[in-house]
Image 1 (cartoon, rainbow, N blue to C red):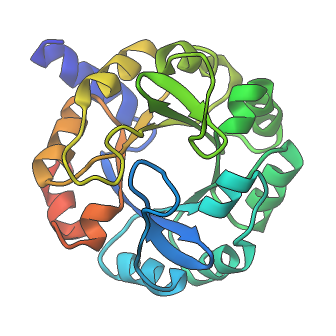
Image 2: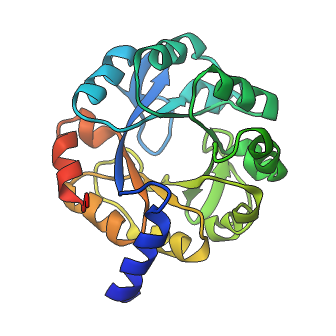
Length: 257
């Protein structure tokens, strides 16, 4: 993609997000904030209590938060509802929540509870029409999570291959009302060794739906590269928790105009 094409893609995908956004992750397992390496249980590093983490990022200038019930993602049903409710009751910025949301009724209940966007992975891959079903009553509220390992979409907490590539999967959701695609590159997730921009670029080119990138961010240059690849936003976890850079530094590193 040429520089001109990149600028065009970035403009198209960030319209709904207004400007490129750096979104802190608050991933919750057993009631605590953790970061996993390549999404594998047993690799977690623990970073304390969810409300405290959320307040930390709000105080640092976060414009929204990315919440994940990791136990829900693995087990197929929400397991950290109390901790997530506490975060929602505490913060005054938009939140997006994923992990264990399997039905339209579950999604609507969360949206009515105060979550701004629900993230559907397994449910949306197994039944794409659920995106349209939820969007009928709650427009622009569904983020479809396409997590990829070795170029294949994976579901059930990143443990099972879906037999389809992210680009093939993304083509389903543009007409179903998806507000965004959350693309997590599991191959680099949690390793703090840098991002893979080409899969992000391919996904941006394949869909008109804004793409939120996640996985592997370790430096400010990684953030800049994902913006240049056309992503509308980036979710950052380990790099922020480990102090590789501050949220203010990440926000300043990208074009905020």
